[in-house]
Amino acid sequence: MKKTLQIGGALLGLLLLLAGGYVLYLQLTYYRIPDHQHLAVKNAQQRVLKVNHAYTATTYNVGFGAYNSKYSFFMDTGESKQGKKTRGKYGTARSKAAVLKSTRFVIKEIKKQRPDFALFQEIDTNSTRSFHVNQVKMVEAAFPHLAGVFASNFHSAYLIVPPTNPHGKVRSGLLTLSCFKISSAERRKYPVSSHFIEKFVDLDRAFTVLTLPVNNGKQLILINSHMSAYDKGGKMRAAQLKLLTTVMKKEAAAGNYVIVGGDFNHALGKGIMTHFKTNQKVPSWVSKLTQADLPKNFRIVKADNYWTTPTVRGTDTAYHPGKTYTTVVDGFIVSKNVSAVAHNLQTNFAETDHNPVRLTFKLKGTD
Image (cartoon, rainbow, N blue to C red; front, side):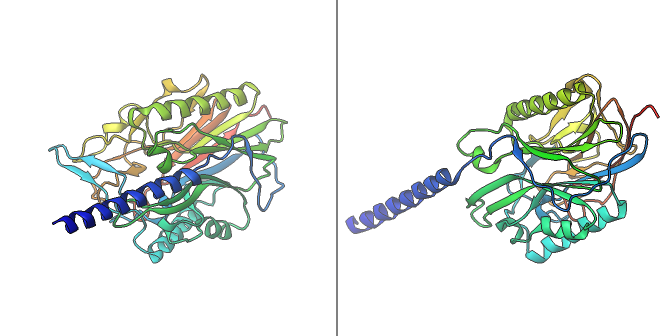
């Protein structure tokens, strides 16, 4: 009996030592990328934007190549209207082949649109979760005629959760492609949680600010944004929105054109949070963003099929049309000197947990 207790004590001590060592590893490898980071522009273009000409832009959260219709994610939780609680299973994509298939699907869908600008979120470069497939390189190679700007917004140490399928090391971010000249590109750091656990799984949320010259002497400020999702109480998202709107107001006050695109992780508008048919309650990761939250002279561009085509699904389970929770969190916000219409592109969540959105816009001028 004594020997058994000694063995048990030794094993417990070993487990505590390993746990302490892992926590120390996480803490020592944790860092934040500084604010106002200058970003390199690959494959620079020379064409300059013109006023009163129609252009197109797309935004697409590619979900690191994991989210086919059968996929569920370990951090996502939900609850049915009957009270049954659900949680996703996986920390990584199901296979490297699945990641390649998903990435090729994303490329095909965006190529169909032939956009002048393409914004991507949650796109990996070298991550355990996506089997080290460099999605950024694949996408850039598929659009050799476009300039490219990449910014990191998720660079974690090796995460051992969930234990049966660890998320691992992550290198991911925001990719923006452009047919037109980019005179400067900057990464802005969103505020994120400093909570001991949360800070390791919601690293370095950010948005990129691209400045593009226009032929009337003004500039287009194109912003690619991905706000936090797992933010209980919405404190961080409120702080993030405050920073984003401060930048928007400053640029508009300078007379520039402003377009913000991306995954806002907020239901965009009143009513859409509970509009689509589902057997689930509204998940905790969904907040609401309405016109009242925006600065004066900015507007959310609601798609022409806003009420019929959602842009995101819950990933606490596989996708079941009419049962899985869906809403609209992806899209664009524009300043008053930009005329724009949008359309949510229907993919039925075949290879990602998001649908892309296309924006058609003009920069208003006097000629």
